Length: 511
Image (cartoon, rainbow, N blue to C red; front, side):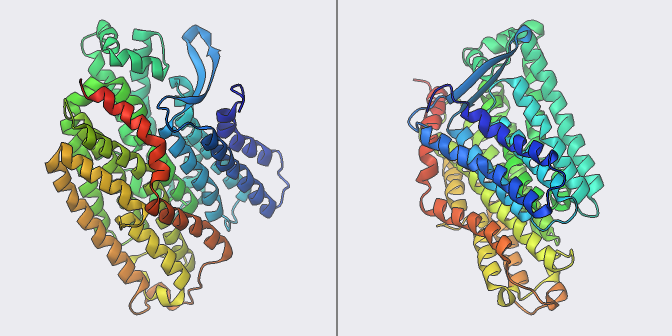
């Protein structure tokens, strides 16, 4: 492929071109509108497949890079780049974007606007995963909030208005602190390029330059960036916006938010916070380990207490994403971490980002199927005997639940196993305590399976419960296929990130 070919820009902006096309075609029928939106959304998967074919998995640096001057007076550049971490997330977005549209296929209220918002959200998320300069990165970061807000507000449940406002207020509030932090970085260094700043941080120059502004600045900037990312993930105790937002959002939006938007926060920890503030992160990592453990344990036990199935899956998402942060903080907590344990923890965290995106999106879709057949009911006691009425749905949903549970042979096992083995070699007591989250996860998922799919039919299940339609099958089967494929052959993912993780660990361990 020609070095001048703007493949990464196409990955980011083709979904936005699709949104513009839908805007310019107001008289298009709802069916054609959905088909056109699906085609533009699938373009990401096709283009990311092309990027995968052009990607050299043995290299740790950025590939397929694009750079153009944008605001010269402020040293702002339009710069995109792809490494193993970015590629994994671009592939995940390419898979979940079209499936989120398919999950909303039967939405009758203004389908054109809904499809436009999904395409805008997809493009913004891709920009976050590929931008390497803070200004375009932050613009993509903030633009993702706009379509997400309207998807919740317009098509959400009874509490959608409050949930949408809470979602925006929390995330914009956190982003404001991050913006102030990067304003301080720019005053001190004159650049906002992530790779240049990482180089300055590696030799201590970034902290020195920030100290010139005032002795408290290095710590203040660190906490500003930390807060902005912590709210997005979310890191406990900044999680309170998430259950309502995920529960009130329409099914397709819930799938995208848990599968992609929460991963934007984890990506920020790995791409921005850790490279730019390694000393500060090491200093505060012991305390942050406790916060990650809070998310692991509290998220699982809170899910166990829920009777609303959608809120149960939402709290489960807090639990699963917190494993990724636990792995990172455990690595950063030690001055000289064991390189094998650190590698296992970091590879596991990246795999968990991908695998949880698949399994959580599938579970939200399954709850959406239950809700659509029960006139909006989604309580744990509203169903029973669904397995006998809808065996195909029961089988696919069961695989999704056991993937989330971490059953060996499915994709959820690989990342969690590597995280636990890595954290055990770094901070054994944290790995032991996090097992409480595993036990609670097993309890509430098996309760979900037993109550909903087995036993006597009750409540909403008294009505006829048809099995999956063609569109619903086309949405769920690809997710389950990915669970099986990456559970049996995880090396398809690990080969993409092993060189990158090896370079990270090489800088952690002193010679």
